Length: 149
Image (tube, rainbow, N blue to C red):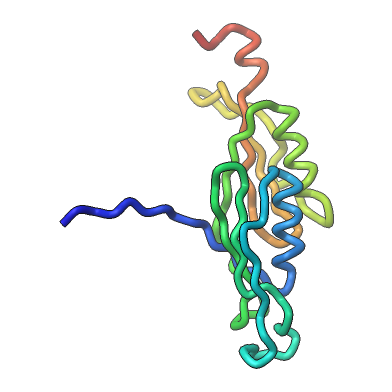
């Protein structure tokens, strides 16, 4: 039996702030909403769920992501970490700044990775929705110093 190629799509869960989160992520990284549906009143377990996002799919760069406002929990499960490679330090700094808008927190600042991975930089940011983003980029000092061949 031949194995089928599959695409793994990260699915994030929110508690009423899904649409706001998608907008923030697209602002930070660029992208577009592909689909968004809302919870109909008759399908809701809680009245405040009506009209919230039931399911959304969106692109961040070439990555398809999905999310929704959970109907069965009062808080999102934010155990997953998301990593995005940016092309330059200014692009990484811009993405981090966008993730901080609305109450995000820097967990560790953008800084060079230790050797032997010191050709890159990385930062950890918890967005206002509770998810941790690891933002990486090339280390400009490493490349400027001619350490890469």
